[in-house]
Length: 294
Image 1 (cartoon, rainbow, N blue to C red):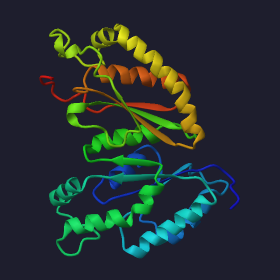
Image 2 (image 1 turned 180 degrees about the vertical axis):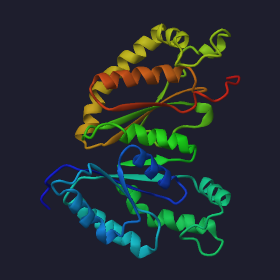
Image 3 (image 1 turned 30 degrees about the horizontal axis):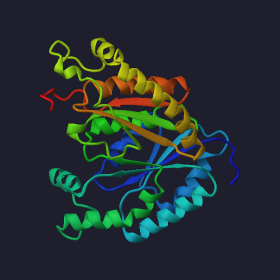
Image 4 (image 1 turned 60 degrees about the vertical axis):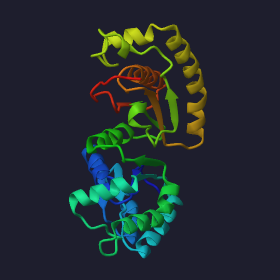
């Protein structure tokens, strides 16, 4: 294939009920040209047409969903053929079995691979059949603990910027009491820092407020931590890029995800931004109601 122009291509796949359609809608809202349910045999032809001079499409998202076994094999072959001619990114969405069961029960939809009413067997069969897609994925997003809004924010962070081949980094602040972000590549535990929660005048605020920022950043331990972390990131970020990573997720956790992790996430995001790399900062738990910490 002779490439006449650059087109950014993303393939969205994953388990039924894990948010594949919501991710596709998020890309559509970001200006991507989204193609759903395209037969695998037509994937190569569609990409060839998009590369022709005069075509104004700059970003294409292909959505691959659950069908029968032959469909998966055909899609695998089509993507392998595509990989030999042009680079693309593959996003895989997943969730825990229990979460998927609850979502299907809530919507009363039938799982595409379920036999009769055996929903769980359909989920397990789809998970097995889509093993190739998960293994090939550049980005795996676990939506078990995500709302639709959370997923849209994450997609905007990864795909909302300008076109380019730079690695895109997402910084996620979180509270350990609500669970670890499963899709994190690097996890930083900042619970060793003094906790503003125990100061009554500061407790109602969160890490986006200047009072909390001043309290956390004024500590000697914070200064030393950030100094060492910047040195580390200066080394590892270029290494990840050289290895061909398209996405990187750094999770920063404190007890409740409202104070220390939020401040540190913003600082890390600013540092990466100064390096000229695309970065998005998401505060997963900052708006949860504060409760007593142990």
